[in-house]
Image 1 (tube, rainbow, N blue to C red):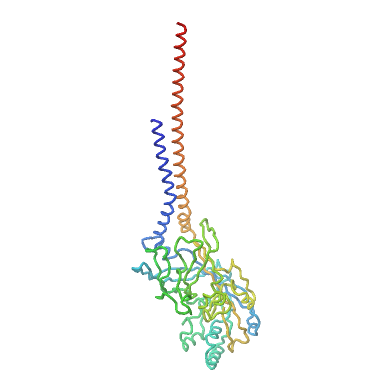
Image 2 (cartoon, rainbow, N blue to C red):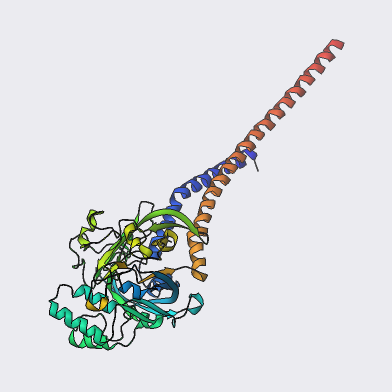
Length: 468
């Protein structure tokens, strides 16, 4: 083959390869993003992603910690409560969506049921462990009845005494979690219906097990991927009615398990929590890696449970106490151990040691308020922590492998391919140039040899003439 034609061919091939690699450099991320969008849309046709959304296969666990009161008698005499943390008591959480209904406006409604199963091997103790905590029935009633006429409050106090119910309760973990028989509960349900959240056994999580979180309607992302998983309504409501300002009554963000893709460090994670009866929002903190998968960590800002004096937008959640407490009568919600709360709260109770690592709320993406009743003795008006729990989940097994392949390996291969095409194209162009250069050099050498031979011949001719 003619070396000149070969060089031209290599030059064309190299140029096309380099151009293809350069185009891929810009188009590649668009292709990947497009595939992510197609596969994330909540649609039964997306078999894998839809199945993961419907029957969440990621292991979820709820770890429960009790603040065991060590000096209940002394507390009744007016001394500062002393508590010790007991636990965790770990429960595997199963999540399953039912009554799934798709709507023409690209939303889908569902009921998400949750069930819990005790995991002894992961727990620091057993459900038979006995702990002493504040009695929600007595102290909760104290708060709800404080504005009632004295005669009615006296009657209720007498009722507590009749059923031998005091301000503290000593029960097994299992009874406190999932319910215990109480004659007082039966009495209240009969004569004061609606006062208690349960009509059966009374327990802190009795209404959690085998229950749903309400009817959620969320966006599927089919029309706009930026809306995927965002709540359209909850129990038919597009806003709440239990708080004092429109801002506090807003239902923002997602249902708290998934968010729209393409998060940035400027993004936030808003979500609606039925258990907290309000919307919450996490903010970016730092980058991280889990099992080779890059991630962003989002944390709860200090303003989440700040009172209206420290953070004006929270004024609608008042009447407020110290910052760090969310008023949901008859209890208050806070971070564990009063983390990120007003330091004065730590002076109310002995035995608390808040740290960010143990008690801060975060997501990696990829207290009873008591008022005196007759049966509470001289108990002081304090914020006493009773229980805290955390929910956690992690990706493992085949799901982890799939995520690692799709989120790490394939994008990495795409990047390598882009630069390989560009490198190969440039190398081919360089080869074509060198080949062309060598060809010209070879032709020049041939011409020089021919010229030298011609000169030699002419010299011989001259010499021959001289001899004649």
